[in-house]
Image 1 (cartoon, rainbow, N blue to C red):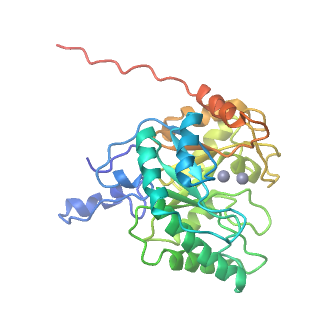
Image 2: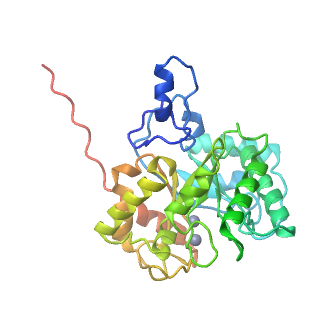
Image 3: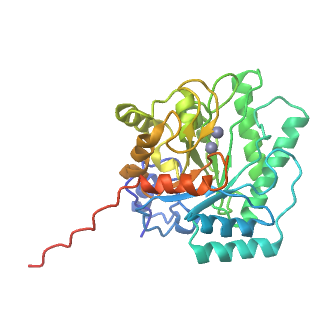
Amino acid sequence: MLHETSDCTGWSVCGREKRGARRRGRRTPLVCWAMPPTTRTAHAPRTTIRIGAHVSSSGGAEHAADRAHALGCDTLQIFSASPRTWRATPPSPQTCSELRRRRAEFDLHPLVVHANYLINLAGREGELLQRSRQGLRGEIERAVALGAEYLVLHPGSTMGEDRATALERWEEGVRVAFRGLERSELTLLVENTAGGGDRLGGTFVEVAELLDRLKGLPVAACIDTCHCWVAGYDVRSASGFEATMTELDATIGLARVPVLHANDAKAARGSHLDRHEHIGEGQLGRECFRLFLNDPRMAGKAFILETPVDEPGDAERNLKALRGLVTPRPPARRAKRV
Ligand SMILES: [Zn+2]
Ligand SMILES: [Zn+2]
């Protein structure tokens, strides 16, 4: 079956938009980059959400799969190298094959890699920009080697420079980093940020603008619940949640959001302070996550925790808290035989 998800709104490279072309007899492969790569062209829609966490890959990324499985995850996020230094070594072939094997065994899908926090593709010319470009290239290469479906990138900061120039530089940086790897099965996810100051990506409009600059590249978005709140979106009240969803769909498009970061927020709405909190213990509260997790528009998406680990057992507790908020669906009624 070709790509026919109900939430696909049709964007630049999405199958829906190309249906016309198909009808006209052109055999263009139908591709939606926001879809898991294995299902991009022959895709049965996933109807349930996946829940997981960011886990340590110390000792080798294959051990991250064990940790995620032990926690009870069905999706996971990792760093492929230290997130706060430029040093990185490629994963060994054994790590890559073993990670694939364990993910298949434990049904861990998708695998999301979070890029280094130092990368800033929008900053002014100089050593940081050069390192950022090389850094993103390394992130892409490692994520591809590990068989990851997604690589999450923070958009960075203009560092006080002219915004238009910064955006051009950002686009160039991503294009350079992807050169020759555009056809790999990896999608780059631009994450919404806490916003404020020179930070890019604080609004859905801005994330959409960044994505739209990258036509032809495999890009989509990752939405962080904490970042939404501190950037100013009221995702806590039912009406605010609905308004946020409407805006998200009208700008980025829900079909372009395969992954969400599920984090409660320590700071106030609109504060631009990025401080994650345990699920249900922050400003967002449990009801906010109930709204996200049970919204039919979220079907097929992966929710990944990036909550603090203050004490042993925190990851399990947060995962349990999220799962506990998912309302089980009643079994589908069988059609009456006549
Ligand atoms: Zn996040
Ligand atoms: Zn954050």
